[in-house]
Image (cartoon, rainbow, N blue to C red; front, top):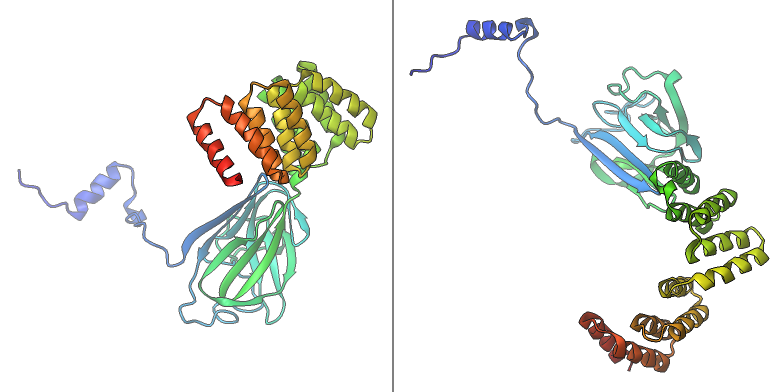
Length: 349
């Protein structure tokens, strides 16, 4: 059958029948933007940080004081708002803000610039910017930088609690330090998590208490969590957790009593783990004592002799390490472990 051409009138009738107004015009095509969209992200602790923006190019134009006029609020990008999203409370250059999304603007001058974070993050550029919606105004100083053709945001030098955000374009960059109160953020997260399924198991309460202990924070709450774990099941791990909390709070006598009680419940695996924790903490002699005791109590276990050998090698006692590795080699059945131990002995000789 011959296909007939679709006339404009026929198309209009078809669109009208489908509920589409001809007066609205044809639907727009989706085409590449001149200033393309980008997102940069970084996790700090449990906090997700991201900057979403569009990347205009220099295109041989005068940028500062030209394409971006001085003394006028600029969208810090192109098209829609540049948006900073942070999933927990944070501080930027020392100023604290709640979690949320913020529209990023800049007020450039020939000398000092002003960074603006707006509570309005859904606008098109800075055309509807209203100072009454400011969440933060901060004086910033531009720095000279290598030429950057297209505007770029980076999240650099991340640490356990901070990251440096940079706005980079042309021959200029602006650094902004974003900091997170990680211990408090994690504590609040753990407290929320303990309202869920982990609350029904001793391990969850012990893990929560142990995190506070390792980070020396919220020790009173950690002690309560430790007690919740012990109510469910007393064992080597949670008894030692409570002992360490009590010791940190200044009750050495009660801590010693709990450690003695824990030792009576300890399994081979528990003691071996204790030895490795001491070894990782740089307490090599204490680790060796723990591993020796474990080897004496479990002489048929290749693993305890292997662990003792590792600690002796760390101390520099090659002869002692070779002797313990040789004992482990006599007992081990797994071929992969045999090859590893043989190779280790060869390196020590």
